[in-house]
Length: 358
Ligand code: SF4
Image (cartoon, rainbow, N blue to C red; front, side):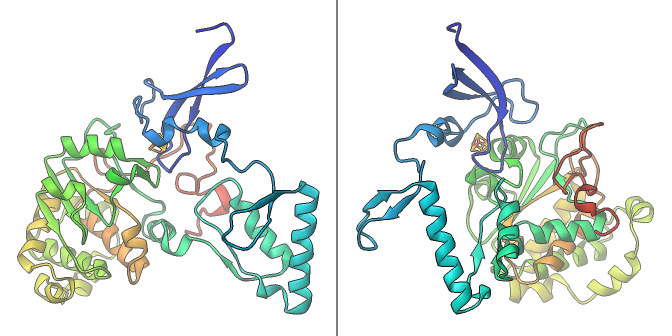
């Protein structure tokens, strides 16, 4: 290592896996990024995208200054302009629309959570348009809110086994985390490690995703019927009395009402709608109820389903009646380390004053 070389600990934000990394610098220039072998979560892992992350800074095609189109649309001709010019021109065009048609004729949209996202909404508000579109309704937030309403915060599959136990059963439902790299803060490589160690794997997905190849159960449901399938799981577990009664008695409310509610949602009822046979549903329900600890790795497939909120609640209830909430190797409810106040409302409901409101 040359005297000018130094290594700085950081976290990759190439996706939502947030792997811990070592950033190697020569002077102020990043020369490479490697996985951090001392990380308790990513354990030295880094994917090709993370490795290539210095190119975000230095690739010759990276957008570093404002460009104005210099020809017809599609010609790919661009002219460099100053920041002042670019901002004035945009302000002029926005003001013109506002004066001629009204502020609501400008709609603003943005993608998933990034540092700038707190400001786009404020910009829309200051400009005066209510037409603001974000991914929340069909990406993650319905699961987040359903979890808040059902148990105070979002539980996550304990793929690390920090409590001393790895999941014995992993149910992947509407999530292909191991093949897309990472999602919702869950690293796909670490999920793969947990899948290899699990005794039972259940995949609920219309597509034959990678983990379905070796899964004990692959339920190829009709998209949009996740809620019906979850209710049938609950019905099967209750009717075969595979419920974790001590957990239900001590940590839940409304079990009797639940029994009444799901009485008609039998596996036979669910079969024609979900296109999963009643026997397959019952077999998978038995597996998740009798292989402990079990966890649920869910994903956007739930958020994008019909009635995503109630679907998510049904799935949480399913994990609850099988005694897999807030236990090692099950659905962990992480708490922030002492003295750390994360901004994320997933682990810190005090952020945004959400305590007591969700
Ligand atoms: S999985 Fe995501 S967070 Fe991890 S190294 Fe790759 S891009 Fe970065």
